Image (cartoon, rainbow, N blue to C red; front, top):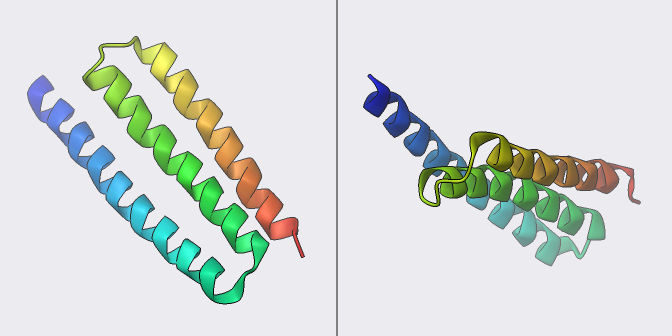
Length: 92
């Protein structure tokens, strides 16, 4: 049962990484088309959120860091990412 749960977590983290990378790529393409700084800031914010999810999984699963430590790192990257996304909505 535990192996199934760990496998599920690994798969969902990988899918999150793939979807996040695709969304970031599309946002960056939008920036290249329009040269709108807010789209660039949005893509960086999305990158922080995606990176946080990926880093948490790698640090916990492969480097054996503590769960609280890796979750704190993910939370900090999420805060930075969401703050950048909010900033991108406020930019003109």
